[in-house]
Image (cartoon, rainbow, N blue to C red; front, side):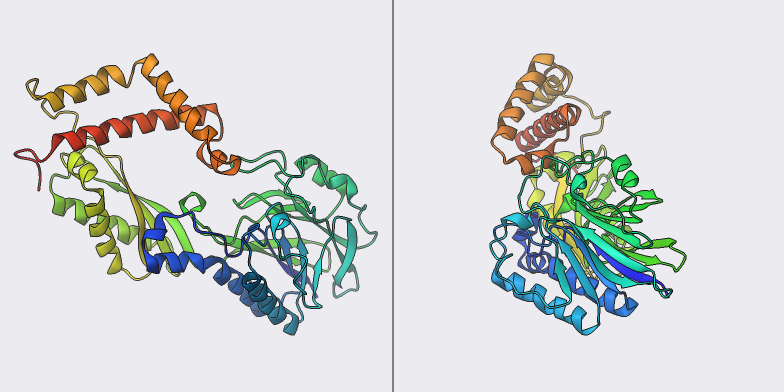
Length: 424
């Protein structure tokens, strides 16, 4: 008889909204409750699959704003697992350390919360009697600059050994360095499975031993786009491990591109958006999709789309409302006028556009001025938010160039007004 468990991490229960969805009360409520719905879905999965254990590898909470109401909701879900004879093993992550209620909540008897001292816990056994141990450490500090791996016990002899660790490994874009260690060090430790947490993107780092970063089970904004999942693991009596990702998140953020190249009428643009929404809806047959539309391409409508962002957003939201489970979070307009559009030298806006595109935006001095302004802006942001914008110098250069280009097009669109012959 196999030993089976679900591995998850980074639920960030009741995380505050960082989405543009705040403007829509209904969508705001959907996003606000999504992390709770994800936890309920994880518990449902554990019970339906009759697993032996649930492993939560850190960042169950989302920091200091966690309320007792959040804790009570968690306790109720954990009691459902207790009734189903599912054991729960939890380690703390960097966000959990700031929670004010982590020491006040009494957990059900089926839950074991690892402390700062590593110890092996007997989680169960295979059908042949071979024991299964879970090793974990919860570092009660928002910063862990040193590896926690040296504190782990060696593998228990003649047993299956599972390690739980909240770590950035050797580093990950957009994530603070936390309890760093290398993949080689994890492999060399001799455990059969490493249940990791901290990085929000799922990745199987090694098959033997099996080392999994499950990603987060529910995205919270457009930068955490795509379907989210947990990992279901089965350990056979021969010690072989099988694993699969199970989609959990009830609401998926997605960027949906809409190519408006050569589209010349407003009605044509709406038809193109409708087709893109239909394609986006098929990305997730079940659940909710929260879409950010990205309008691209060279079109005579470029100026009007930039001048009327609220109108095109309302039009797109109206189209989405007729498609069940589809929401529009925001629209990014990156369209430009057709390259073949005639330039009227007597028109000051046309002449300004030519100067901006051909001379100003390409000038090294201008680019450096923009980079300095952007660096000053980033310097005013908290570190975590700053790292969400840029990963490195190359990414910063690309972003500043894009912002300058988009800003220039927005200015030109605002100055142009409605001209005779502009597409309706």
